[in-house]
Amino acid sequence: MAGEDKDNNGHDGLAEGPEGDKPMSFLDHVGELRSRLIRMVAAIGLGFFASFYFAPHISQFLRIPLDDAWKSAGMEGIAELQALAIQDPLMVDVRVAVTAGIFLTAPYLFLQLWLFIAPGLFAKEKRFAVPFVITSMIMFLIGAAFAFEVVLPFVYEWMIDYSHDRGESIQLELHNYFKGTTRVLLAFGLVFEFPLLVAFLAKAGVVTEKTLMRFWKIAVLVMFIVAGILTPPEPVSQVLMAGPMVVLYFISIGVAKLINPASKIEAALAEYDEPDEPDEHDEPE
Picture 1 (cartoon, rainbow, N blue to C red):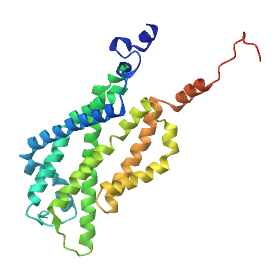
Picture 2 (cartoon, rainbow, N blue to C red; picture 1 turned 135 degrees about the vertical axis):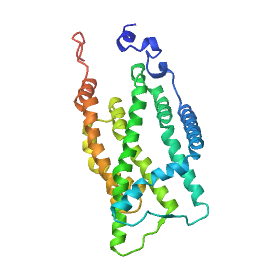
Picture 3 (cartoon, helix red, strand yellow; picture 1 turned 120 degrees about the vertical axis):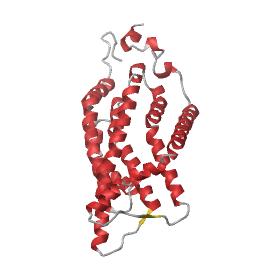
Picture 4 (cartoon, rainbow, N blue to C red; picture 1 turned 90 degrees about the vertical axis):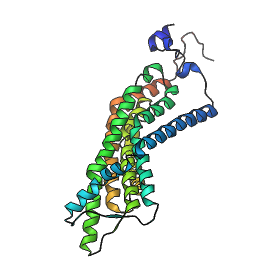
């Protein structure tokens, strides 16, 4: 049919729309989500078991921001992390292995996310699966690397200097350090996915750059609240997380404008809302 040739969807069984016009109920979507989540949890579990043996080595790697901050602050020796409970070393290894498992299986996790949203896409949009997974992984790693190389050393050095200037003895707790470090790494990895999310929503016509600009004040407030939840309870790390989030938000506005300018959407809506012209053969009542 002409419509199929125009949209290039007919040969893929999608001539009438996503999933070949196969309807999915709310329970179908819930079942699909549950299936994808089970696969993701299973993948993280496999990553956990693959990483657990190397947890002590990964823990030494995660100490680098603290050790660098300790030296930069002019402290003698190395920073000692104290275990306050007998199970703390085991729980630290578990936390570190889970985090490593997430990074190890991240491509598969993003693939499962894509497969969940793919049924709502047309055939030509489904071809972005590989770029979506690759871009998601790159942004996730960039966010984690930014936290590891910039945020964590700065925050730890600031806190060490602050305590040292007050003449306080510094005692670092093992479990709290790795809890905060792994949480910040994962949080920054997810935060850096925001431009990709906006690009997807803009491509789907859900948001425009005008929408993002209209609500930027509310968005900035929400970002600082989220940063306060995800980071340790001190202001420096909160600002260091909220700052990149704000920058990424305005970058996302540019992304949305490039992908799907508001003028095009508004023109389409205006054309859709335009009343039909009366037929010249119609007689007035």
